[in-house]
Amino acid sequence: MLASGACERIGEGDSTFTFKTKDVNQRLTLAILNHRTAISLVLGTLLAHQDDAPIDAIGHRIVHGGSYFKDSCVVDDTVIRKIEEIAPLAPLHNYAAASVIESCREVLPQVPSVVCFDTSFHSTIPEVAYRYPLPDDLCESLQLRKYGFHGISHRYVAMTCDQLTEGRCHRLISCHLGNGSSISAIKDGVCVDTTMGFTPLDGLMMGTRCGSIDPAAVTYIIENTDYNAHDIDMIMNKKSGLLAVSGLTNDIRDLIDASEHGDRRSQLALDMFGYDTRKYIGMMWAVMGGVDTLAFTAGAGQNSPDIRRLALAGMEGLGFKIDETLNAQHRDEPWRISADDSEVEIYVIPAGEEYMIALDVKRLLGGD
Ligand code: ADP
Image (cartoon, rainbow, N blue to C red; front, side, top):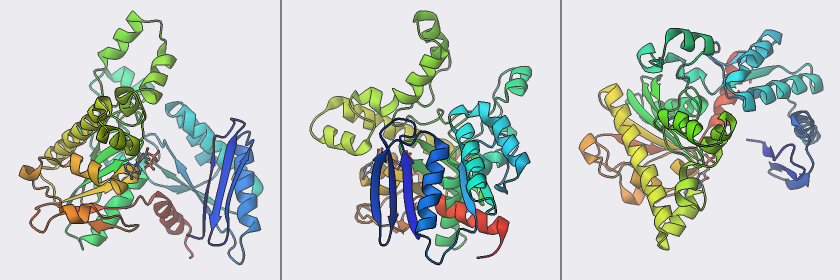
């Protein structure tokens, strides 16, 4: 990696721009009004620091590829139109992404863009797992089905586990545990199920998302409060999960700290997260009829020995046995944490979405 950075709080007056290379470490607070301004800032800064490495291509992460995008692809007008067409399925993300791609094409018209979708890796999930048992006309007209997300991350985990195990990884459970969390079942590199669904709200309880709840609870809330659909969407996405149960924070680091200081609600939030994780790991074990490899990735998966211990507590019967000395380590590259006599090989894989996108860019455009 030559440079990294981020634009955050776009459109909020106190936006930040961070940019890091081996020589530069800059953090600016300024007003970044929209994504168009953000991308001009990013590309301008990169070009100013490019030395002898010109920008040959741009890779974009796109949240939703609908049923249409089953792989990453090179951007042309049709691709942009299709991303906008799918946007009602992910309105907060896809419109912004399409506008970023357009801006890149304006600022650097000669430079090709490649788009990589969070949903594509899950396009192999069989109908028995992706179909919702709702009436046909509803499913068809609204494109209601399980799509799954975090696919770029799960694909990177699958690729890395295949390399680490030298081909022994046939039935893999990939646990992406961050602020957003999902768990996937992957058979010989092909995704067969995942916990997120029509939206990234489904499955595990997360930092501020409730995860899977009885769908009737939603209609019950509508009937018994003044909340409308938008309010409920906000509540379930931004005000639920670990934040709601703890009443304190969605950050697992702070929850661990608070529970060690005796905060009962923080302890409950962590216990619920651990319970959910184990439940879905068990589900993926059942989906594949067994497991030979399990991997943790993302913020908590990579950095928290406590969360990894909690996620596999009491699961020795299914073949999961952590070596606590290895689990206590912190590394910036993948490492094994399973005990020598564990039936399942267990790894920690630092998240590699950007690397995966770079590999796709190279695969689709050729060259170095
Ligand atoms: P996102 O899901 O937003 O992409 P990350 O994958 O970076 O974010 O995960 C961020 C979350 O990871 C934080 O909110 C925090 O809960 C958790 N996390 C990060 N570092 C640690 C740590 N050392 N111990 C426990 N949890 C951590």
